[in-house]
Amino acid sequence: MLQLVRYIYLNPIRARIVEDVMPLRDYPWSGHSALMGRVELEWQGAAYVLGFFGEKQEEARAGYAAFVAKGIDEGRRPDLTGGGLVRSVGV
Image 1 (spheres, rainbow, N blue to C red):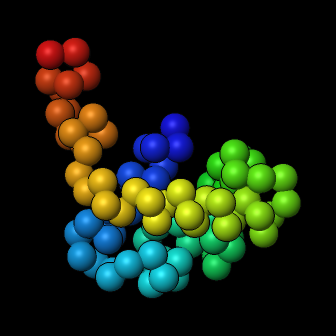
Image 2 (image 1 turned 120 degrees about the vertical axis):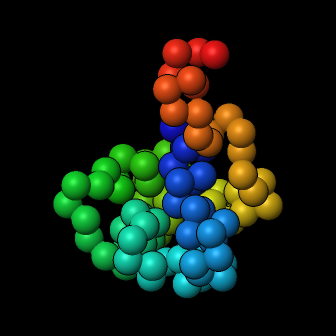
């Protein structure tokens, strides 16, 4: 689950909509900004995701931010992209 969260939230960087993780914190169309405490999105389970990185909010955000930053160099991951119907039936 964490790999998928990271992959999805890095999409704006891969699409070159934002340059790196610093402007990603304020990008309004990504849940990353909620996990970093910049906006509040009631529908997003930010506390749940952050709970994997620490008990204290500041510690959890730092751990999460480091985890996301490490994923930038991975680029597109075939195991987490596309496929649609073909992939959903296991082909």
